[in-house]
Image 1 (tube, one colour):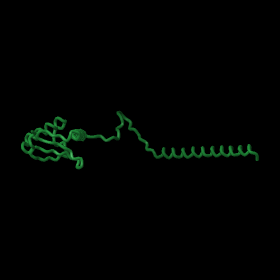
Image 2 (cartoon, rainbow, N blue to C red):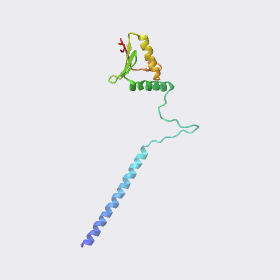
Image 3 (cartoon, rainbow, N blue to C red):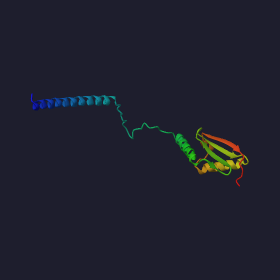
Image 4 (spheres, rainbow, N blue to C red):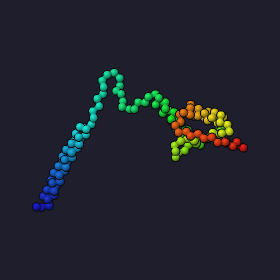
Length: 143
């Protein structure tokens, strides 16, 4: 066989291999797509008036209110440590809790000042806290 004939035979064999490879890939791809189509679940939309109900989690009004309250309380973390005239507020990141220290020399004033601070930050009640520890100690007046 001369060199030109050998080249033709090699090209012919490569062409046959390329065609076979393409056919195999097409068959494999079609089989995979049929498997995927068979495993998919079909969602049937209800007929009738109005949109179909989503599968998302629907909150009750009470849960929505609690979530809003927790959001406001958690925003206080950005404002601590905070020191008022009769109280201080800090956050313990290790234990995930707020630490409130009230001036034991004047608890009425300290409580009033802290409640006012909460209201300024949109928090209507201490009951919104799930993680508030309260301590008392005497404060020394600032010079």
